[in-house]
Length: 308
View 1 (cartoon, rainbow, N blue to C red):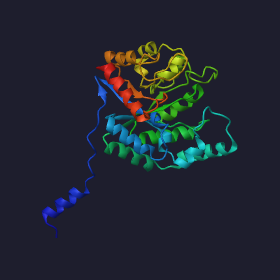
View 2: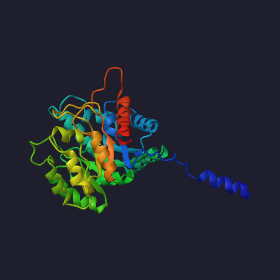
View 3: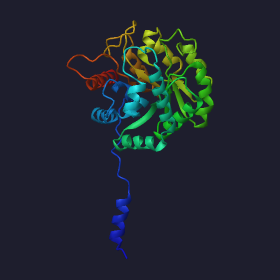
């Protein structure tokens, strides 16, 4: 027989460890987070650990999780080589891309619930997942990505779907009751199937009540958009923004030095109380003597100052 004290001790031991208090990075009503793509220049090995630690240190509570940060390093190195420009897809790389696609299809959801737990235990949220598909994307790829999004506890699946793919996404994502944030390709005006104009996004919204946007403010600046007008006109369907600062010529620069009107965008969202998640998507060249982690911190400080 066990005493009441022993039984109580066993019960306490069986309880799950408490997660850290949730980190809030909402500033005057505007949710600021970080896109994991911001860490893409860092070594792939251990990148998820760096993201977790960086977010914790900076007190950035919301992550747009980029699928390559979760992939096996050796396979990602072969399938997604870090080279300037796309270049030709060699037979070796084509094989690696298909192997990566199969890895995504076959990886159990428990792999992603474990990632979700790591973030939750640190007080962090994965609100959005970007699957970064191997194209051409198949229906089974979309279905699995929806399952992964749910397993991660994310509310949104964000991807640069084409217009034709968006029509196939609707019944699949609706089956899971999942919101889809279209990123589009505002710079790719040569591809008639790319979502490159505001009207393309607005047409896609009609395919499902769960469809919205997550446009890249850098791409749209270089693409000649009036981003402020797009946000105002479609604010009910703007789920999030990938915040970059670029010149009209397409050069990514430190925040505040380009033509993307980031301060005005942040203040518009604050003043209008739009429920838009704003993700730091840092991709400008790191200055000598600095680091990508410092760059992300500078972006966060810019957002704080803009919203003060």
